[in-house]
Image (cartoon, rainbow, N blue to C red; front, side, top):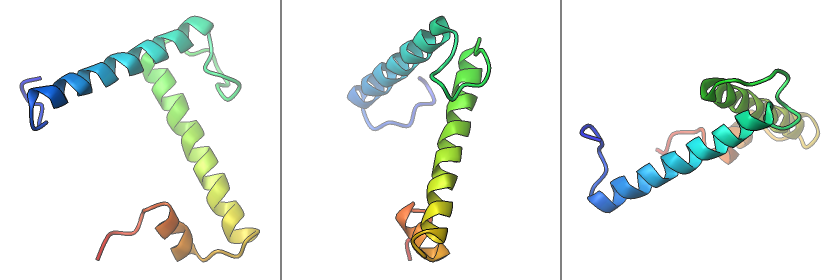
Length: 89
């Protein structure tokens, strides 16, 4: 916590609570042997769970973006703005 850049002790406490909740949820997934249907392999470490969740989030986001470009004729720029990927000017 010495390198923590939060503004006050309450922020640090909240951050630690969120870290502990996240850790607990990931451990619960490991005890089940897999993290829902999208985990194509048995997950044995928290790192594997995090990477599997990242891959799934990326897959669903890309599927959404491709769908909106092809099915709804959204421009690439509109998709980028909707996903908040365009820097503020």
